[in-house]
Amino acid sequence: MKLGMVGLGRMGGNMTERLLNDGHDVVVFDPDSSAVRALAEKGASAANSLADIVGQLDALRTVWVMVPSGDITEQAVNDLVELLDEGDTLIDGGNSNYKESQRRGAHAATNGIDFLDSGTSGGVWGLANGYCLTVGGAREAYDRNRPIFETLTPEDSDGNLYVGPSGSGHYVKMIHNGIEYGLMQAYAEGFELLAAKEDFNLDLAAIAKNWTRGSVIRSWLLDLTVDELEKDPRLDALNSYVDDSGEGRWTVDASVELAVPAPVITAALQMRFRSRQGDPLGGKMLAAMRNGFGGHAVKKATE
Image (cartoon, rainbow, N blue to C red; front, side, top):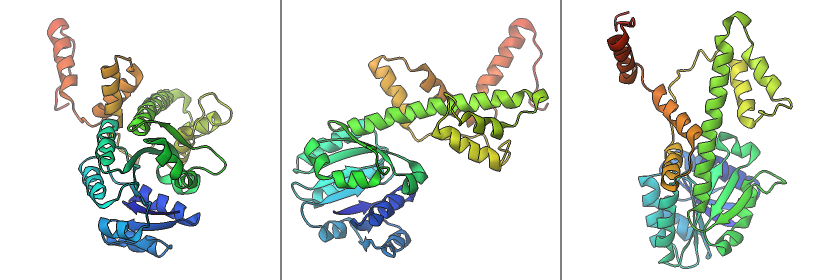
């Protein structure tokens, strides 16, 4: 099955390579011409614009957009809606807000184009391990493009799942990422408690590896933690600054909108915010108040 791939960053490039390895014909485009050349050397057909991608595909076309959420996705989708023909399929595999995907799906439908939102999980390991995909949009469009989804998922698995109407694929991925925030925070707090018991001199890497063997808290996240701790037992090379991609915020927003409590995910998101503050005012306010009402000792900024 021939398709177009727009966006050849780390995930988009790996996905394209996986498709090529399975015998798919892929036409690729990215503003970074070196990324296009690299995949052309592996068998992809190079395109120099979105119009060129569309021109190289036969009807019924499928174009997969794999670019960062926000304005760049908006521009790519709008341009492709104008370039594609009735019956073609446009897939957004990035981390777009599900409400934006619902709107884009409705916009594409006005031109007779099927829009699928594919929540895509697998990160940099996807080339080797495959991706977990949750797809929203018209069921007929999903079925028509199923060979693509089956190629991208792990072998001998049902890692691709049609979940419902437009926007639902990205909604499910959003909640997936919210859960991920909570899991990561729980592991982080647990290992910090282990390290804090200094008189035990605990081997964090050995403990993490032990927990991957049959423990109820074993997971791929824990496997990755083992790898990092074996390279750097106290993670001295890293700073504690932790960014967020936006999906955790959207998950918390959904919690408020639906009046469904999500205290663990919310706290995990707030901890990421705190990680970016070297000397937060909130802490100073707490110290000032304790000193004010009880005369408790405080540390001055110079200490």
